Structure formats: C-alpha cells, structure tokens
Image (cartoon, rainbow, N blue to C red; front, side, top):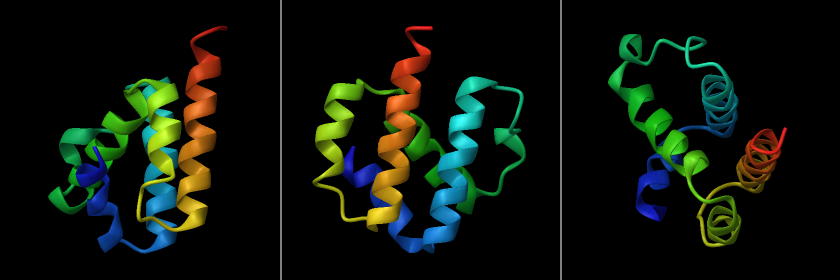
Length: 90
C-alpha cells in the first residue's frame, strides 16, 4: 500500500488535501464524485486514497508513520480514518 500512495508525492499538498476530502465524501455518498469523468492524473491518486481509507483502520494508522508524505497530509488521512471508523459504529 505504501507504493500506491507514493503517487501523491507528485502532487502539491493542497491538491493532496482536496483529494483526501473528495475521497472521504465519496465514501460517505458514492454519488458525490463521478470517478469515471476524472482525468487519469486525478483518478490514480483518488483510487490509491480510496483503497487506503477502505482498509483496516488499525493497520492504516500504523502505516501512516511509514509514509513519505507531508505532515498535513498524514494528519488529514489520520482524521479521515478515525471518521470512517466512527461511521461504522453509528
């Protein structure tokens, strides 16, 4: 999974944060973002973030420390993981 999120390194931090928010919204409501209409440059990182957030929260939190991403991006991912985890119990 680390390799999949490596595609984020090519994007600036603001774009990474926007993608994380978009993926989270997509996970809450699959009609919010039309994935098929995205360009390849965005679809690939979107899919990597999607796969990451859909994984086991306990394992994903541990993986965050090993990722070579900006601290803001790691914080955003961590918060979305916790929110996804909380959504499963409501």
